[in-house]
Image 1 (tube, helix red, strand yellow):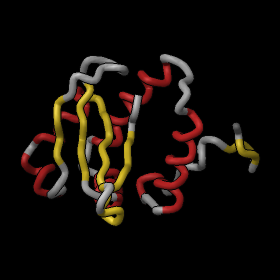
Image 2 (spheres, helix red, strand yellow):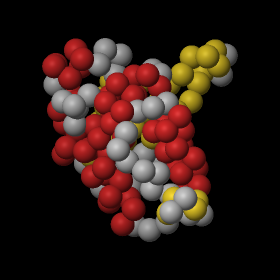
Image 3 (cartoon, one colour):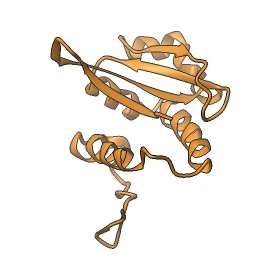
Length: 132
């Protein structure tokens, strides 16, 4: 199951898009007016995709700065909602997407400097050694 998807438009490679799947039970606040006013251009959608449970919702964004703003917003439920959905996905066991997940995690949280994760160490390292 995809937790976070980033891409670009085929004919406009500089134009980004993406979405994050989250738990609707926690992420429902993403449909409230105050949230949508703080994050213009972000669009929450209900989805029938239930690989990690029947309460999955989809939050669409137009670029990486919007994603980082979502994750850095202290009033946003997105981190907790993603955490809940991911915990359910991880309990299902490993998938073929594991390595891409590690790479994407490092790019977003370390190279783009997401302050929400400033105090978190890379979870795929242990005493300076990369865990495969």
